[in-house]
Image (cartoon, rainbow, N blue to C red; front, side, top):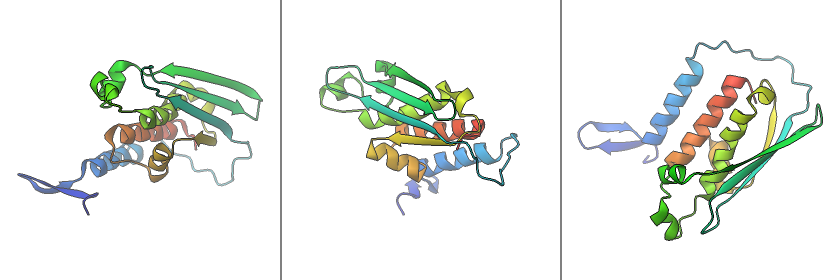
Length: 169
């Protein structure tokens, strides 16, 4: 019960923030003005194969990378990114938290999914995607469709919105 509701001191019962964020996400997806096409036949094209990884070692700036292979064209490419100190601080990993042993690896791993979808927006349009994500906590959030960890939940929602807007599966 605590996952779905919480007591607000003046309003009484209200939606848990994670659930409210999920409902907002659904409203954007289903009430948008974009026309949806549901294919009646399975896509005969092979899916894009995507693997990402991130590293967040003490004393080093966290980085992430994504590798993409399109078996349809045999095209292969990749991208690398560095996570800025300001983004890490937004996630709750400022210099003090990092010095005390905090590790943003789960969030860095999860952030690679929406970064991939944004960077490869043209390639993913209407395509199926087989995505390999090696962080079990981040993966669980994507499978579940959300997380009570706010930064992880935002990455998941952004990824779902990007995938939906491009017709990627």
